[in-house]
Length: 548
Image (tube, rainbow, N blue to C red; front, top):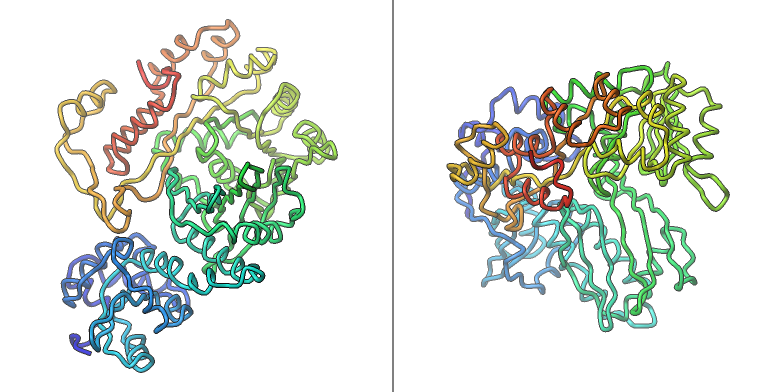
């Protein structure tokens, strides 16, 4: 194999000026068994995967490829077993005479290269590709022929393998949901990544029944019931990570549609400092939740990250001398040291009845998954008034909108005024891809948007699209927030039924930042784009939180 003298990755990165010896030592301290140094450095945020690949490409003179656009020769997968490909994160992609081109995440893994040469009999020509790119290619190409050529009378075995591949791909893509959409002649597999659905794969119609039956068996659902919707959950370990799957089935004219929500248990327990709250908002929110009693609401549409913020909040308050009880529908994540109650309407265990029982359990802190009706709202408010700290959620467009929403439920204003201490509203926006981001001068129109919110800006972050983000320019999501802290003046305005515009004018004069303010600040920090913030703005039909 024609390759340079063997070099250590750490030495190459130090020569490129990307990391220091101290950072390498810190990364090695966090390194898990069999984990590669490059993965740890990326995981710890010392450099991006694109920077890592560029250094290897320049110093080792090895080309890089984008597998999702590369015409892979599917027959080559017979040369390397799937287990070897996954364990070493590599993928055979091209054969020319006696040279086998293999996409590798770590072309410095000389042991793997030597083993491949011995096993295949070919000279191995390594090329660079991102880890996610390789794993997605493995999930896409391996076992397909075997699965689809299986006898129709024995579809359950391939259904098991196909479902494993589908879920593996979902975790690799960091998808929040997997959709199995049946149609007349096929079943489409779609993934929701960073809030957007995208088609990834099409399966033959004949595998549909076996595939859905496999999902139902894992989720402990009734496989004979196809006329009614069903809900269940699955707990799996994928890539050594515990994953919770929430399963929902829905009868359609072409068979049952299945949606699988992927809950990565390793990412839910974030600290409040990891939620991208600006320092002023973080300080005020920590002060609000440190009070011994009161009602704290989180608002926003479904899928806006409220649950993550809720769990981060109560986890920060979780101590041995505090009794925390939650009532949820469903229990999204199981937290150690916290008593969690699952709503079960079929036996009469609703939010309201669960909340009444919780009050007899000597709680300090109560979390109600959602306030849906007057009865639950009244019990939650009275709990806050009797010395408990209560967390819950509402579906409103802004923090200020929570006030009339509680009034509209029929709650007496004096109860709301006495109990409510703070409201946090949030939305999710997509993060700029670190691998293809670049700074450019803000246009006059963009500067005008910032100037209207009294924010000065000259340079703005943008992205060009790359292999890492599959050309989208975004990778991952983050929250933007607004925090309404209820002071005595706001309480007086609430009692006198002041209009929302009056309350908004008051809080703005006293330093409250709204969602668009927080979004623009994060654009200025280079975390997201103006286009993304304005996309979220336009999704809100109510203009209260977006305009002066």
